[in-house]
Image (cartoon, rainbow over all chains, first blue to last red; front, side):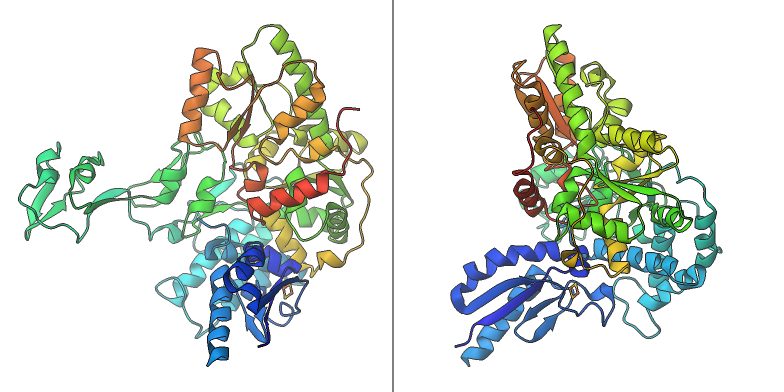
Length: 87
Length: 482
Ligand code: FES
């Protein structure tokens, strides 16, 4: 099975709008899902330029974009993807 | 409450939009349109009863980010006129905080409340124990008459089912000095004679109803007018954004600041002076000395704790020395302290050498408005490099350590850290002053915010990661005592 790739945006807009909390996921995700996920902090994912900064911070779980991302919402998306993958 | 909640998110979004409006070719009109842009026709109404109220509250928030007081503000004045007035203002407003009445209304006053868990028991200890006759039985269950209840919480303690709860007003209960309370209309009011500008109510209000009055427009205007505007960056900034302080300097220069200096430079002077003072005081037989660099603590001493004033160091703050250096170098310079907290705004208002304060949220909003990608920037060096100790001032324990390092073994230093001002630590400080001794140490470092300045109400990063980044950064800096 392919690993789920999580990208956390640490670009300026996302960081100012609250990505600092997402840094916790670098520890939380591997603890929770082991090697089924791969997480990485990224520089600007270029999502902030197209829509309002009000939607930042952004994260990506494979190709799914999560706006106003929180620790919870990223975990939920990973869980959803893992469940779907197993079916 | 978590730092990254929707209320702070909203405030930052508004700051970005206000700054963008300023940078556009029609500040007034584009400011007027912000509430409509954020809640366009037909959009969903996330928080309030209707779109009109949402927009009105956004309008109020914008007025605060333009730097005005909301208490008693005139509803009829257009946002575009406020924007215009902000451009005409010569000095920032005196008080640092303002309450948005409209946003505040949703919160019930502090009271004791009987929940559905009440079993309507036979013993009725609540009824028996209420000294004020506030409890009666309605439909077999207890009920509290709020006009008689004195909030003594006796009934809560005696109920065998834990059925009675105390509803708290977050701002009232977090305020360490009882400076905020509800008026008859149920709106929170700040008593500025008591307020120490600690910013705790700003962080804790779930409705985001308490705003800092921003000076960002005043600062940007000075830059636009071609003045030499110098940014003085507080030590805690090193852990706030995904870049180092040299890239941060580049970013601020890009925004039009003429120079950027580290306040850690002033912190080095504070540490040295304070070490000298500490040594003298100890030789004269003083039982202890407290630090004096935290603005929230200084306000506390000045307004509520005069008994500890004789024990507080006379040494000035890092901001003081840094601003003095900047003004000596160029008396025409406009100085801006870049700050982790609102308390420094109150300190700056009393110091003629500090013209403005820009907090980290406002600075972050400025970078977003300018579309600056920090990690891509080239570094710019500082004229004066500060010491490791000075750069650590913003972390709890950092000030005490610098004083100890600057003292360089001359005195016997035993540090005691007061990590956060709250009712309990105020009581402890009062005790030290009254007894004239502190059993935990002779150098008491007081930080108003937990974690130190990295826990300030305007910080962007979490305390944990910010502290770690600062430690990583400072370990290669030069030591203070050489
Ligand atoms: S900063 Fe996150 S998408 Fe641009």
